[in-house]
Image (tube, rainbow, N blue to C red):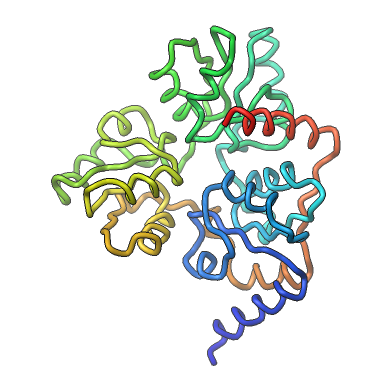
Length: 303
């Protein structure tokens, strides 16, 4: 038995011993996806965490995702194997910046993309995901809304809504690596192949694509569309996920630039250590957690 197989066996044994559940985001490395109990997008996984009987949640992703799981399951222990696995987009907005934005636009509701810190969620009126952002914005009575932190997703919402959207200039560096030329070159390489890009991409890339969808939406599109081949414009880990879910179809990564270093930080050794030590644990001050939970639950009620 090689060392990797032995490590995987130990992980499974520790998981049973501690009555834990392992969650892995679609962008995680293949070996982490392979040992996970559930794989999906951040909100889908947080919902799984809240529904399971497990009291210990090992979240293989980035910090805001583990925080979201804790917000929805405050009674459970949530562990993030690599505590410095962050999200550049989430880090672009601080609670102090959002406070200033709210002061500048009083009485304007704040819609907060889940790709944000607990502190920013706590200052928001309601959260949204890439899948329901337009629905959430349209559900509000106000004629204008503040949308944080992603100008890509917020811009996509603005294009499809009659409401005035006040954007914060945050963005995902990985998705913003894609340029229109990258997409055009992919279409030349795989002609007549539908292109699905994430709404976090910039407008020029979105406009050239055939479909715009978050990772969960990409799975549904690929499963239900008549095409047997797709060009995928999101982080490269999604290709492995799609190949495993839909092995009878082909998936091409739009660009080799689609690599998130934070999503790739978690290795089997990190997972093993976090199960052994049951740390680093996600802890959120009660006041912030309760306010953030209110914004999350308000979204889930509409969704």
